[in-house]
Amino acid sequence: MQALPMRWEFAESVVSSESSGGFTTTVENILSNLKSIGWNWGSGTFELADACEHPLPNNSSGIWFTDPPYYDAVPYSDLSDFFFVWLKRALPGRPLLCDPYDPANPLTPKTREIVQDETKSFKGDPKDRKFFEKRMATAFAEGRRLLMDDGIGCVVFAHKTTEGWEALLSGLINGGWVINASWPIQTEQVSRPRARESAALATSVHLVCRPRSVEASVGDWTDVLRELPKRVGTWMERLQSEGVRGADLVFACIGPALEIFSRHARVETAEGREVDLAEFLEKVWELVGKAALAQVLGSAEAGRGTGATAALEEDARLTALFLWTLQSTNGGNGNSSGDKEGGESDDEEEDEDTPKSKTKGFSLIFDVARRFAQPLGIHLPDWEGRIIEIEKGVVRLLPVSERAKQLFGEEGAGIVADQLERESKTAPQLTLFPDREENVTVKGRGRSKASSIIVSDESLRTRREATTLDRVHAAMLLQKGGRANALRTLLKAVQDRSPDFLRLANALSALYPKDSEEKRLLDAMLLAVPR
Image (tube, rainbow, N blue to C red; front, side):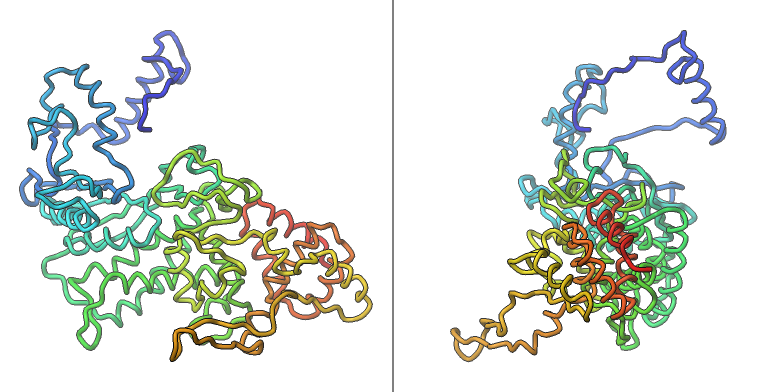
């Protein structure tokens, strides 16, 4: 933490104690760790230097390890000043406690710091996004220069926005690295304030890299695409077997996929066009999304968007992908961005990769949601106001409680329940969206600025008809309202109609967080299903 908190702790090990904080136990633990990594120790030195102008010569290091900054997420040097002023008093005259690039600066070095902060400048130019990405690429190339040919590099990422990943990964690849693997390591405490009730990453992804040969070949785009599905599928299975879930799993798959791409000097199509990293990552996202859908909804759903006919509609697939991405590595299902029933967030810290929300529901950054949806033929704006809400770069999955008026109209579920109970001996019809107008006037750009287009009810029929997800939500609302007779009637009707209702309900029950209201309603509703 960027603070000096009060901690009730001993200043040193207790000599007389035999507990975990005792002197003897502490020494034994240290010796055990040293023994486990070997005794071949030598002397070493440390030095404050610019990562873009490293003092080591070419091919001089066996390991290059870095946990780089992320744009404007953390102002490291400014925060370091808080501690620096006390260190200078504790160690007066220490050579390291000065700025080697600006002797007049009494605080931490800032001139060459790689950070996005437009209030500062470097060589007359502001430290904007362009500055950050250019200097990061230079630092990555410098790391490649000083590493031995058989050396290993590791870069730690904890980003969840694909835009940030693409920029930094491009810098790595252009700097001469081959990305071999990516391992999610649980570095964040589950109990930290930012991890509670949010979709924050539970892990930091460690990208393992090797120097790319100067004689690397030009890759064929067709061969890369042919090899990609097997590589992504294998890693998804392995990571899932080890308990990695959701966003952690997505970003952990990027490393193995990138090895196929980054081992080449460049990748070209048959026509000679160079394929950039963004185009390749789109394919990776598409494969991960299809694999996720195949896992939670069945193999038929994964083909949607590529010409195959899937049984479930777009809104069901979007909801399933949304909840799958929010799953948490550290404890089964993911968390909502609100309280245990989708309420107000109590986050105490800002985090660079997760939107802070004070509304009910489940939230994802728009960029992440779009990357999944677009390759699978799901157009997010089509479902805005129906199952999602898009605001300020964040996509919110509407909680079931907010859909009551939308599904049942002003009269609410009570009148619909009465209708279902009256029709229980016949063939009940679930009429949703009762308040929709027959025709919709859409203002658009025609020959004149004032022109408008009348969109017929028939053209909107598929959007206005109740989908399988609508019917599941309607049943959940009847369960919430305690209308047991109406619920049983509805369940009998939807079972006779198609097996998709139960298939989707069971899938969503497995995806919703275990302590959410949706999970509770779904499980209770499923208990009422006629056997």
